Image: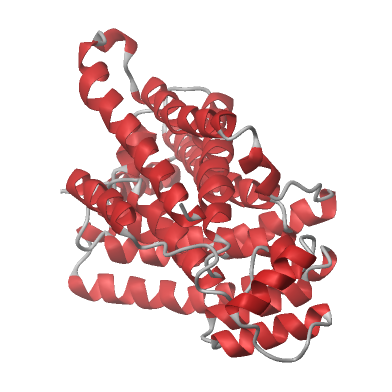
Length: 366
């Protein structure tokens, strides 16, 4: 069994376990024990549990394949900036998808507004950052890497988006999954994508907290100051038109155009910062090969680059030659990086098991 097939079976198992508990066990739990906070914690537990079982069943081998490397305070700060630079891109994709799909996150966060900020930070930012990155970038992405980088990035991102089980989140989660995988390659550490994921989710909470605090202050001042009273009325009226779906067609086009322009600029800066982060982590050459593969370099070109980087003969290895090289040098670049230019090594990602998992997720979206 190829690693890709094994990884697909793992994802299908996580999905089946998640749906089984949600459809068969949750309905019999009294409503007084269920609210948005407890359901969010439960959902993360349902994702984490199969991952832990999978690691134990494989004698801890999946953990050995996950890049775990200390980042340092400087890199952590840069990764947080990297994540914030991607916010306009995610906002554009989110706003565009809201033209034809419902945004469930807004209502989800509103229902948790009565919680202390620190509690929401743990539930919405800390837990998903650890659990989802461990599962999707840790187990699934690393399980795909020996196929090809392009397939691994695309396949893991699609599964990450599909598992959210609604169209709106699928759209921007796929984009997030791609950039998280690139960050993982740039640093060689799962901690990097965890920090970025935390920053994304925490950013939403912080902005909402600032907005609510400002609005409450204005409402309080409006009780004694007529100028603040007028401002408070305008803000209250604008709350009824807080989504792009409430805008007129001209407003929608103008909003999306503005977001798109900003997204292009900030995403370009994020890519430059990603290269700088890779340089600080001594992985700039590796990242350049990954980006070359994603941009469409042929198998021959990528294999040639890898050969040059490792001192191999400047030619494409046949399958037999590659197998001899792998057996001869298990710690070589091909094995160490999990990227070898061979289409057969990791196996086909989009197989029947993968498609079944996607179909189940799509059915849940409908």
